[in-house]
Amino acid sequence: MNTQIKSVKCVHTEHCCITHGCKYGDPKCPVCMGDKKQSFACEDCIEEIEYMSHMVNPPKKAIDFALDECTSEDGLFFLDLWRNNEWPEIKARFTKFVLPSSVE
Image (cartoon, rainbow, N blue to C red; front, side, top):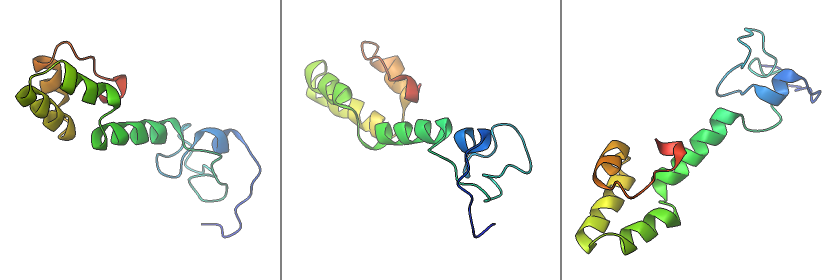
């Protein structure tokens, strides 16, 4: 890895990721080689961040659904399924709830 990272932008700095690799399949990608710094989190990083935030902290929409649309027991069960990422089970048992696209 280069100790002096160049800050010149190019297609790689705008699309590639040190974690998720070169979006162009270039084995000498300057971002992946550590020669250039990526400008921002790639699409895959952003999706992972959104996915993780939904797993750890159910959005207000999920909490409201558990409180307003379910019996106490079902609401707790729904939130427990959410915490354990049981998306198919949520989809099957709680058909009124629309899952966010990031977890389907």
